[in-house]
Image (cartoon, rainbow, N blue to C red; front, side, top):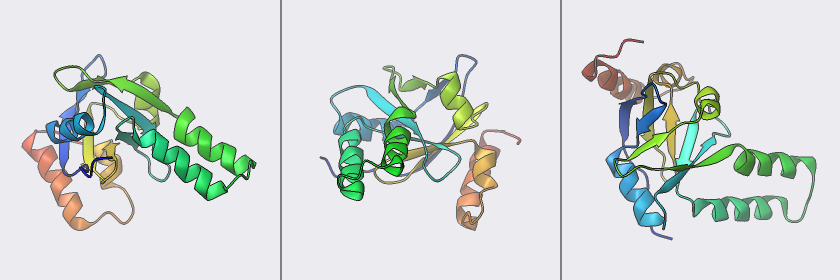
Length: 157
């Protein structure tokens, strides 16, 4: 697997057809790490946002579950597998870099008219910017970045 990781941030509009542009830097990582022009969008395990990653990361998620539960086929293992694989969608990426968020994904991420993309290394996050700003423990510098992006694009929350 390549060592390229997701870095950076972007605020992008979500149009009436639920299309949103994946930031160019994130698209470059997806294309370098995967054979397909697609991304997996899933529900975050710990935050009220969505996460995105290349399709090859699924194998790592499966390996992590196998390591964590080591043959234990408990309800906790089932719940973890459901969250990792059942609460995700393979989403095609247009040549222009746009993806379409299904109504379910939009609802799960509470995404409305804007999506704030945030690099997180092996994956990236997609936030409703208001939810991210309201997150407990958000670093003040990150809050300034988000507010600056909102101001630069003339977005009022």
